[in-house]
Image 1: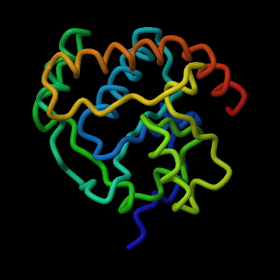
Image 2: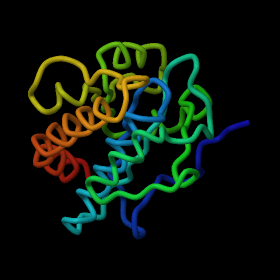
Image 3: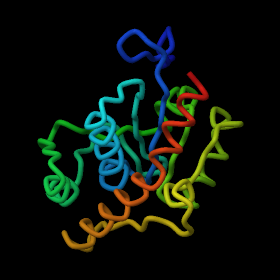
Image 4: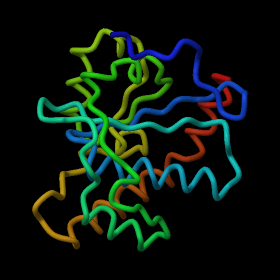
Length: 176
């Protein structure tokens, strides 16, 4: 079964700049980055982006619920996700998301390297989120570490998105 859409993604019938945010399971870090970036774009009235996210690890599955801790800390920044409002996407089953991406942002170097197994990622600009923000290192998985670890990861993700926001806009305008 081919899951790829027949025509390229658009936003308001205009070409969209497609960003794919990747983590292991698509239940915490990528959920926070995905929803935070969507909020940042909406708050600025920028609507030519299509933000998607997915899990790349062998244990990634479709339709897993977003972590309760992730949903709780997102409320701190005005994002209120209900339990089934955001469900995970397994990139092994939805490779078309990699193929359609104009930019791929991962949470770790390991995830960025895992993209090498996907021919759809060949030639795509791919960075860790910290790398894209001009920093070194990974955004560590807060799983099983409690709400404060999730809050720290959210702040780290937010800082990186804010630092790289102008570059993101510039890249989108160069593409569209």
